[in-house]
Image 1: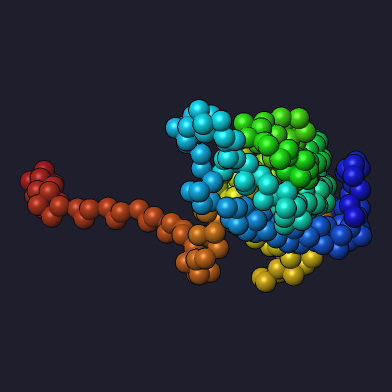
Image 2 (image 1 turned 180 degrees about the vertical axis):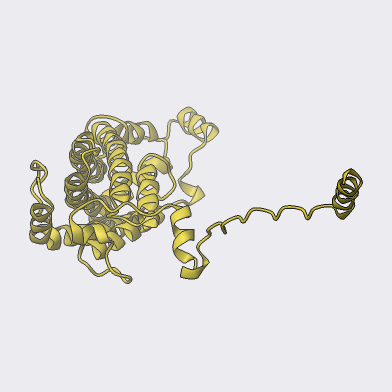
Length: 311
């Protein structure tokens, strides 16, 4: 796998190409693993929570609770208790999704570190804050996802037999679950920041196409905004980036991957000029001076008459 800490950037294009050739396979595998783990974790988590009991019989209203209290009978548990007990009875079903999501978060660092190193070798404008954010984000997001998923199951299995809705809510809103949720949010924010910086830098250096660079920035935004809760856009970007790093891009890899130097993408004006036929280049024709007006015949005849009279 890619080393956890980004070494100093290579000094020559040949050094950059040599390092990329040695680490290209691991970076592509990290991208594909992150895509598969992210998508599988999101799907399994959605299926698990979709199976929670939602029957109205599990809801205890305030009037019913007061009636049970006045009659001296025990108050039946509410929906929150029933759902938490269901999670405890099906622990593996609710733990596997967050575990896969956490492992996918760890794998994100491999592809981000490779893109950062390749971009930094071609452009000194890439800030080191990007790789720091990628490392912190991958660890925090991965650990937070694991803590939330595992401790939710542990709290559910340790729920007392006479627990109430209030007990269920307290079990899910305190202790390790609160810390895990905060770590997951912090890690997502840091990963989003890293995706934006690295995606933008790699696009400017010519390592990513404009489409892939813009899509990488959008993926970074989805870590903060609820735009891709199933991880579909993120997984698609990771699969495509893995193919690009592995040299399996349909139209061939961008020139920057082959030269070891920055090859910025041409602007819209440059593309228009490249699409013109060779003989259609715009150039101005040389301007010829306008011919002088012919002499007036009437004036020439008057001058001749004057000369004759003088003679």
